[in-house]
Length: 383
Image (cartoon, rainbow, N blue to C red):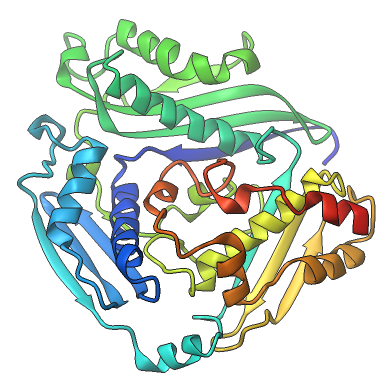
Protein backbone atom coordinates (compact mmCIF):
# COMPACT_ATOMS: atom_id res chain seq x y z
CA UNK A 1 0.00 0.00 0.00
CA UNK A 2 1.60 3.24 -1.14
CA UNK A 3 1.45 6.48 0.83
CA UNK A 4 0.55 6.86 4.50
CA UNK A 5 -1.87 4.58 6.31
CA UNK A 6 -2.56 3.42 9.85
CA UNK A 7 -3.11 -0.06 11.24
CA UNK A 8 -4.27 -1.13 14.70
CA UNK A 9 -4.03 -4.38 16.67
CA UNK A 10 -5.11 -5.26 20.21
CA UNK A 11 -4.17 -7.77 22.88
CA UNK A 12 -5.61 -8.81 26.23
CA UNK A 13 -3.91 -9.97 29.42
CA UNK A 14 -4.13 -13.25 31.30
CA UNK A 15 -6.87 -11.90 33.55
CA UNK A 16 -9.26 -11.03 30.73
CA UNK A 17 -12.31 -13.34 31.09
CA UNK A 18 -11.93 -14.87 27.61
CA UNK A 19 -8.26 -15.52 28.25
CA UNK A 20 -9.06 -17.11 31.63
CA UNK A 21 -11.19 -19.58 29.69
CA UNK A 22 -8.50 -20.23 27.08
CA UNK A 23 -5.98 -20.98 29.82
CA UNK A 24 -8.34 -23.33 31.66
CA UNK A 25 -9.20 -25.22 28.46
CA UNK A 26 -5.53 -25.61 27.55
CA UNK A 27 -4.64 -26.63 31.11
CA UNK A 28 -7.18 -29.45 30.77
CA UNK A 29 -5.58 -30.43 27.44
CA UNK A 30 -2.12 -30.46 29.02
CA UNK A 31 -3.34 -32.60 31.90
CA UNK A 32 -4.74 -35.17 29.46
CA UNK A 33 -1.67 -35.24 27.18
CA UNK A 34 0.68 -35.59 30.14
CA UNK A 35 -0.59 -39.12 30.89
CA UNK A 36 -2.43 -40.00 27.68
CA UNK A 37 -0.85 -38.64 24.45
CA UNK A 38 -3.58 -40.36 22.44
CA UNK A 39 -6.36 -38.59 24.34
CA UNK A 40 -8.85 -36.56 22.34
CA UNK A 41 -9.77 -33.18 23.71
CA UNK A 42 -12.19 -30.47 22.66
CA UNK A 43 -12.63 -28.48 25.87
CA UNK A 44 -14.68 -25.32 26.26
CA UNK A 45 -14.85 -23.06 29.31
CA UNK A 46 -17.39 -20.43 30.35
CA UNK A 47 -16.76 -17.97 33.16
CA UNK A 48 -18.97 -15.36 34.81
CA UNK A 49 -19.52 -13.81 38.22
CA UNK A 50 -18.49 -16.47 40.74
CA UNK A 51 -18.96 -19.34 38.25
CA UNK A 52 -16.82 -21.50 35.94
CA UNK A 53 -18.33 -24.12 33.62
CA UNK A 54 -15.98 -26.58 31.88
CA UNK A 55 -17.54 -28.63 29.07
CA UNK A 56 -16.83 -30.21 25.71
CA UNK A 57 -15.86 -33.63 24.42
CA UNK A 58 -12.92 -35.54 25.92
CA UNK A 59 -11.94 -39.18 25.43
CA UNK A 60 -9.03 -40.27 27.60
CA UNK A 61 -7.67 -43.10 29.74
CA UNK A 62 -6.46 -40.71 32.43
CA UNK A 63 -8.27 -38.75 35.14
CA UNK A 64 -8.26 -34.97 35.40
CA UNK A 65 -9.31 -33.27 38.63
CA UNK A 66 -11.09 -30.41 36.88
CA UNK A 67 -12.05 -28.53 40.03
CA UNK A 68 -8.51 -28.51 41.40
CA UNK A 69 -7.05 -27.57 38.02
CA UNK A 70 -9.45 -24.65 37.49
CA UNK A 71 -8.68 -23.15 40.88
CA UNK A 72 -4.94 -23.51 40.28
CA UNK A 73 -5.11 -21.70 36.92
CA UNK A 74 -7.17 -18.84 38.35
CA UNK A 75 -4.82 -18.49 41.32
CA UNK A 76 -1.82 -18.24 38.98
CA UNK A 77 -3.61 -15.54 36.98
CA UNK A 78 -4.09 -13.51 40.15
CA UNK A 79 -7.74 -13.89 41.13
CA UNK A 80 -6.95 -14.40 44.82
CA UNK A 81 -8.38 -11.17 46.20
CA UNK A 82 -12.10 -10.47 46.63
CA UNK A 83 -11.43 -6.83 45.81
CA UNK A 84 -11.04 -7.85 42.16
CA UNK A 85 -14.55 -9.32 42.14
CA UNK A 86 -13.59 -12.95 41.61
CA UNK A 87 -11.88 -15.44 43.93
CA UNK A 88 -10.36 -18.72 42.75
CA UNK A 89 -10.84 -20.25 46.19
CA UNK A 90 -14.58 -19.65 46.46
CA UNK A 91 -15.98 -19.62 42.90
CA UNK A 92 -18.43 -22.37 41.87
CA UNK A 93 -17.21 -24.90 39.27
CA UNK A 94 -19.41 -27.12 37.08
CA UNK A 95 -17.92 -30.05 35.14
CA UNK A 96 -19.98 -30.75 31.99
CA UNK A 97 -17.51 -32.84 29.97
CA UNK A 98 -18.60 -35.84 27.88
CA UNK A 99 -17.00 -38.18 25.32
CA UNK A 100 -16.03 -37.43 21.70
CA UNK A 101 -18.37 -38.57 18.93
CA UNK A 102 -17.36 -41.99 17.54
CA UNK A 103 -18.28 -40.75 14.04
CA UNK A 104 -15.44 -38.21 14.23
CA UNK A 105 -13.08 -40.60 16.00
CA UNK A 106 -13.11 -43.25 13.28
CA UNK A 107 -11.82 -40.76 10.70
CA UNK A 108 -9.15 -39.36 13.00
CA UNK A 109 -7.93 -42.82 14.00
CA UNK A 110 -7.21 -43.51 10.34
CA UNK A 111 -4.94 -40.46 10.15
CA UNK A 112 -7.42 -37.97 8.74
CA UNK A 113 -8.13 -34.42 9.80
CA UNK A 114 -10.39 -33.99 12.82
CA UNK A 115 -12.55 -31.45 11.01
CA UNK A 116 -12.93 -29.50 7.81
CA UNK A 117 -11.80 -25.89 7.63
CA UNK A 118 -9.32 -23.31 6.41
CA UNK A 119 -6.22 -22.08 8.24
CA UNK A 120 -3.89 -19.17 7.54
CA UNK A 121 -0.27 -18.61 8.44
CA UNK A 122 1.74 -15.42 8.03
CA UNK A 123 5.20 -13.96 8.52
CA UNK A 124 6.83 -10.67 7.59
CA UNK A 125 10.10 -8.84 8.19
CA UNK A 126 8.66 -5.97 10.30
CA UNK A 127 10.07 -7.33 13.57
CA UNK A 128 12.83 -9.72 14.70
CA UNK A 129 10.01 -12.18 15.52
CA UNK A 130 8.90 -11.96 11.86
CA UNK A 131 5.47 -10.77 13.00
CA UNK A 132 3.41 -7.64 12.27
CA UNK A 133 4.63 -4.92 14.61
CA UNK A 134 1.26 -3.71 15.97
CA UNK A 135 0.25 -7.07 17.45
CA UNK A 136 3.80 -7.67 18.70
CA UNK A 137 3.76 -4.40 20.65
CA UNK A 138 0.21 -4.98 21.90
CA UNK A 139 1.28 -8.35 23.37
CA UNK A 140 4.36 -6.83 24.97
CA UNK A 141 2.23 -4.14 26.61
CA UNK A 142 -0.01 -6.63 28.43
CA UNK A 143 3.03 -8.72 29.34
CA UNK A 144 4.61 -5.61 30.82
CA UNK A 145 1.42 -4.77 32.73
CA UNK A 146 1.52 -8.22 34.34
CA UNK A 147 5.18 -7.79 35.22
CA UNK A 148 4.50 -4.40 36.82
CA UNK A 149 1.61 -5.91 38.79
CA UNK A 150 3.44 -9.05 39.93
CA UNK A 151 6.53 -7.14 41.00
CA UNK A 152 4.29 -4.61 42.77
CA UNK A 153 5.92 -1.73 40.91
CA UNK A 154 2.34 -0.43 40.78
CA UNK A 155 0.60 -2.30 43.56
CA UNK A 156 -2.88 -1.13 42.62
CA UNK A 157 -3.14 -2.96 39.28
CA UNK A 158 -5.53 -5.92 38.88
CA UNK A 159 -5.37 -9.06 36.72
CA UNK A 160 -7.63 -7.81 33.90
CA UNK A 161 -6.09 -5.63 31.21
CA UNK A 162 -6.21 -4.82 27.51
CA UNK A 163 -3.94 -2.98 25.09
CA UNK A 164 -4.14 -1.54 21.60
CA UNK A 165 -1.48 -0.08 19.31
CA UNK A 166 -1.92 1.99 16.16
CA UNK A 167 1.07 2.07 13.82
CA UNK A 168 1.68 4.64 11.10
CA UNK A 169 3.01 3.23 7.82
CA UNK A 170 4.78 5.01 4.98
CA UNK A 171 4.83 2.97 1.78
CA UNK A 172 4.24 -0.27 3.69
CA UNK A 173 6.95 0.43 6.25
CA UNK A 174 6.03 1.04 9.94
CA UNK A 175 7.58 4.32 11.03
CA UNK A 176 5.99 5.36 14.35
CA UNK A 177 3.41 4.54 17.01
CA UNK A 178 0.48 6.89 16.54
CA UNK A 179 -1.69 5.75 19.48
CA UNK A 180 -1.49 3.50 22.54
CA UNK A 181 -4.56 2.29 24.42
CA UNK A 182 -4.29 0.74 27.90
CA UNK A 183 -7.18 -0.51 30.01
CA UNK A 184 -5.83 -1.66 33.37
CA UNK A 185 -8.01 -2.96 36.19
CA UNK A 186 -7.15 -1.24 39.47
CA UNK A 187 -8.10 -0.76 43.10
CA UNK A 188 -10.22 2.18 44.25
CA UNK A 189 -7.30 3.81 46.03
CA UNK A 190 -6.10 5.57 42.85
CA UNK A 191 -9.45 7.28 42.18
CA UNK A 192 -9.60 11.06 42.50
CA UNK A 193 -11.96 12.92 44.86
CA UNK A 194 -14.91 12.53 42.47
CA UNK A 195 -14.55 8.74 42.50
CA UNK A 196 -15.25 8.70 38.77
CA UNK A 197 -11.73 8.58 37.37
CA UNK A 198 -8.16 7.74 38.26
CA UNK A 199 -5.81 10.53 39.29
CA UNK A 200 -3.52 12.22 36.79
CA UNK A 201 -0.60 10.86 38.80
CA UNK A 202 -1.79 7.25 38.43
CA UNK A 203 -2.43 7.75 34.72
CA UNK A 204 1.11 8.99 34.21
CA UNK A 205 2.53 6.14 36.30
CA UNK A 206 0.82 3.61 34.05
CA UNK A 207 2.20 5.33 30.95
CA UNK A 208 5.71 5.52 32.42
CA UNK A 209 5.87 1.99 33.86
CA UNK A 210 3.79 0.00 31.37
CA UNK A 211 3.83 1.80 28.02
CA UNK A 212 7.18 3.55 27.79
CA UNK A 213 9.44 0.48 28.27
CA UNK A 214 7.65 -1.11 25.29
CA UNK A 215 6.95 1.72 22.84
CA UNK A 216 9.28 4.48 24.06
CA UNK A 217 11.62 4.31 21.05
CA UNK A 218 8.76 4.41 18.54
CA UNK A 219 6.76 7.41 19.77
CA UNK A 220 7.00 11.13 19.10
CA UNK A 221 5.28 14.29 20.34
CA UNK A 222 2.16 13.47 18.34
CA UNK A 223 1.67 10.00 19.86
CA UNK A 224 -1.58 9.75 21.79
CA UNK A 225 -2.03 7.74 25.00
CA UNK A 226 -5.46 6.56 26.14
CA UNK A 227 -5.45 5.11 29.68
CA UNK A 228 -8.70 3.80 31.19
CA UNK A 229 -10.50 6.20 28.92
CA UNK A 230 -13.91 5.80 30.60
CA UNK A 231 -12.29 7.20 33.73
CA UNK A 232 -11.86 4.10 35.86
CA UNK A 233 -11.65 0.28 35.65
CA UNK A 234 -12.35 -0.98 39.16
CA UNK A 235 -14.93 -3.64 38.26
CA UNK A 236 -13.20 -6.01 35.85
CA UNK A 237 -12.53 -9.65 35.12
CA UNK A 238 -15.35 -12.22 35.24
CA UNK A 239 -17.36 -9.92 37.51
CA UNK A 240 -17.80 -7.43 34.68
CA UNK A 241 -17.68 -9.55 31.55
CA UNK A 242 -18.56 -13.14 30.69
CA UNK A 243 -15.69 -15.13 29.20
CA UNK A 244 -15.75 -18.02 26.72
CA UNK A 245 -12.98 -20.13 25.20
CA UNK A 246 -11.98 -19.14 21.67
CA UNK A 247 -13.31 -15.58 21.48
CA UNK A 248 -9.93 -13.91 20.99
CA UNK A 249 -8.87 -15.60 17.74
CA UNK A 250 -7.46 -12.40 16.20
CA UNK A 251 -5.48 -11.62 19.36
CA UNK A 252 -4.18 -15.19 19.24
CA UNK A 253 -2.90 -14.86 15.65
CA UNK A 254 -1.82 -11.80 13.64
CA UNK A 255 -3.88 -8.95 15.05
CA UNK A 256 -6.13 -8.72 12.02
CA UNK A 257 -3.23 -8.02 9.66
CA UNK A 258 -4.21 -10.97 7.45
CA UNK A 259 -7.31 -13.19 7.10
CA UNK A 260 -8.31 -15.70 9.77
CA UNK A 261 -9.85 -19.08 9.02
CA UNK A 262 -12.31 -18.72 11.90
CA UNK A 263 -11.24 -21.68 14.04
CA UNK A 264 -10.12 -21.14 17.62
CA UNK A 265 -7.10 -22.94 19.13
CA UNK A 266 -7.40 -23.39 22.88
CA UNK A 267 -8.77 -26.61 24.33
CA UNK A 268 -8.20 -28.60 21.14
CA UNK A 269 -5.79 -31.52 20.81
CA UNK A 270 -3.53 -31.44 17.72
CA UNK A 271 -5.68 -33.81 15.64
CA UNK A 272 -7.88 -30.74 15.26
CA UNK A 273 -6.38 -28.98 12.23
CA UNK A 274 -7.91 -25.68 13.37
CA UNK A 275 -4.96 -25.63 15.72
CA UNK A 276 -2.21 -27.86 14.32
CA UNK A 277 -2.46 -26.75 10.69
CA UNK A 278 -2.46 -23.09 11.76
CA UNK A 279 0.77 -23.80 13.63
CA UNK A 280 2.22 -25.50 10.54
CA UNK A 281 1.14 -22.59 8.35
CA UNK A 282 3.03 -20.18 10.63
CA UNK A 283 6.06 -22.50 10.59
CA UNK A 284 6.06 -22.56 6.79
CA UNK A 285 5.71 -18.82 6.29
CA UNK A 286 8.30 -17.98 8.94
CA UNK A 287 10.84 -20.24 7.26
CA UNK A 288 10.11 -18.70 3.86
CA UNK A 289 10.67 -15.18 5.20
CA UNK A 290 13.70 -16.27 7.24
CA UNK A 291 15.17 -17.73 4.03
CA UNK A 292 14.67 -14.26 2.46
CA UNK A 293 12.52 -15.77 -0.26
CA UNK A 294 9.92 -13.07 0.51
CA UNK A 295 9.47 -10.04 2.75
CA UNK A 296 5.87 -11.02 3.46
CA UNK A 297 4.27 -14.42 3.10
CA UNK A 298 0.74 -15.74 3.63
CA UNK A 299 -0.31 -19.36 3.26
CA UNK A 300 -3.81 -20.82 3.29
CA UNK A 301 -4.35 -24.52 3.98
CA UNK A 302 -7.69 -26.30 3.77
CA UNK A 303 -8.80 -29.71 5.00
CA UNK A 304 -11.80 -32.04 4.91
CA UNK A 305 -12.74 -34.24 7.85
CA UNK A 306 -11.28 -37.74 7.67
CA UNK A 307 -8.83 -36.97 4.81
CA UNK A 308 -5.10 -36.65 5.53
CA UNK A 309 -3.73 -34.46 2.74
CA UNK A 310 -4.96 -30.86 2.55
CA UNK A 311 -7.52 -30.07 -0.12
CA UNK A 312 -5.49 -27.00 -1.07
CA UNK A 313 -2.36 -25.03 -0.22
CA UNK A 314 -2.02 -21.45 -1.48
CA UNK A 315 0.99 -19.14 -1.07
CA UNK A 316 0.82 -15.34 -1.46
CA UNK A 317 3.90 -13.10 -1.16
CA UNK A 318 2.29 -9.79 -2.19
CA UNK A 319 4.86 -9.22 -4.92
CA UNK A 320 7.80 -9.51 -2.50
CA UNK A 321 8.88 -13.03 -3.45
CA UNK A 322 12.24 -13.68 -5.12
CA UNK A 323 10.66 -16.70 -6.85
CA UNK A 324 7.09 -17.17 -8.02
CA UNK A 325 4.30 -18.02 -5.61
CA UNK A 326 3.64 -21.12 -7.72
CA UNK A 327 7.20 -22.33 -7.15
CA UNK A 328 6.92 -21.63 -3.42
CA UNK A 329 3.78 -23.78 -3.29
CA UNK A 330 5.75 -26.67 -4.81
CA UNK A 331 8.57 -26.13 -2.31
CA UNK A 332 6.08 -26.17 0.55
CA UNK A 333 4.64 -29.49 -0.60
CA UNK A 334 8.17 -30.91 -0.94
CA UNK A 335 9.67 -29.75 2.36
CA UNK A 336 6.69 -29.90 4.75
CA UNK A 337 4.45 -32.85 5.63
CA UNK A 338 0.98 -31.31 5.69
CA UNK A 339 -0.95 -34.35 6.95
CA UNK A 340 -2.23 -34.18 10.53
CA UNK A 341 0.13 -36.97 11.58
CA UNK A 342 3.04 -35.32 9.79
CA UNK A 343 2.30 -31.96 11.42
CA UNK A 344 2.05 -33.51 14.88
CA UNK A 345 5.35 -35.33 14.42
CA UNK A 346 7.20 -32.41 12.79
CA UNK A 347 6.23 -29.92 15.50
CA UNK A 348 6.13 -32.36 18.46
CA UNK A 349 2.55 -31.38 19.21
CA UNK A 350 1.76 -34.14 21.70
CA UNK A 351 3.93 -32.42 24.29
CA UNK A 352 1.79 -30.90 27.07
CA UNK A 353 2.77 -27.24 26.69
CA UNK A 354 -0.42 -25.61 25.52
CA UNK A 355 -1.36 -23.52 28.54
CA UNK A 356 1.64 -21.30 27.73
CA UNK A 357 0.15 -20.56 24.31
CA UNK A 358 -3.15 -19.35 25.75
CA UNK A 359 -1.96 -15.82 26.55
CA UNK A 360 0.18 -13.25 24.68
CA UNK A 361 -0.49 -14.85 21.29
CA UNK A 362 0.38 -18.21 19.78
CA UNK A 363 2.94 -16.78 17.36
CA UNK A 364 6.08 -14.68 17.56
CA UNK A 365 7.47 -16.35 20.71
CA UNK A 366 10.56 -18.54 20.67
CA UNK A 367 9.09 -21.08 23.14
CA UNK A 368 7.38 -23.13 20.44
CA UNK A 369 8.56 -25.44 17.65
CA UNK A 370 6.46 -23.71 15.00
CA UNK A 371 8.62 -20.62 15.55
CA UNK A 372 11.83 -22.40 14.53
CA UNK A 373 13.51 -21.50 11.24
CA UNK A 374 15.35 -24.79 10.77
CA UNK A 375 13.93 -25.27 7.27
CA UNK A 376 15.06 -21.90 5.95
CA UNK A 377 18.45 -23.01 4.62
CA UNK A 378 17.01 -25.99 2.76
CA UNK A 379 14.28 -23.86 1.22
CA UNK A 380 16.78 -21.21 0.15
CA UNK A 381 19.07 -23.80 -1.45
CA UNK A 382 16.21 -25.51 -3.26
CA UNK A 383 14.77 -22.25 -4.53
